[in-house]
Image 1 (cartoon, rainbow, N blue to C red):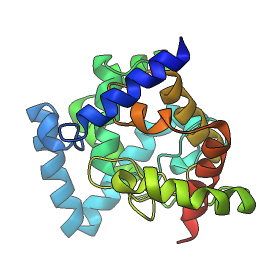
Image 2: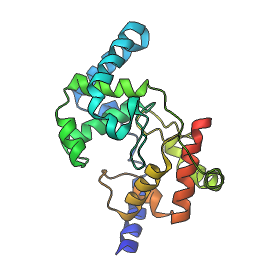
Image 3: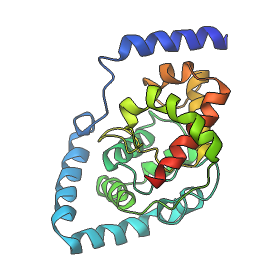
Image 4: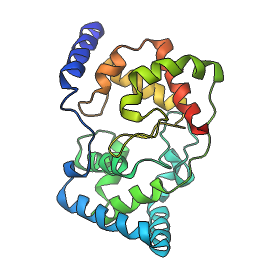
Length: 221
């Protein structure tokens, strides 16, 4: 069953490459996108405005610290770090949790309580936090370099920093990256349709472990 599902996901990946582009601001609700553009412009040109956003974001993120760590550097395996994440990508994920298109009970309940401004504030706050280094296996990282550049770099960038609508994975905890790849490969990911289903279908367990540690190692670049 898994093999046939994996084959189906691979076909979907190949068929969808021209149309499954990054999820940018144009895909977000108008009010959310407009609020983001306005506030992002303010903090870019005004250090005091940025400090206010960081302060407000840190206060609103108090319930996020248990899983995602202080200022977004996760300390617990299998949880993503949010620090230094691409803000548009992060905003999109918050909105998916809020509207239920991405399912995780705790996050769905929490995200539903966020106002539009709070969603934007959280995305900008985490984006401006410095990501603390994570541990990784250097031998595995070396083995994962070629697989990463072949299968991951097109969307996440050669250095793992991603583009506007794609996730930064440089410096993520390897346990979390591996877990996400396994979810995609199995076809049971709680995330929406993505090229990741096809990408992960071609990865064996050794590939997944190696790629996860290589992505974690990119924090040094």
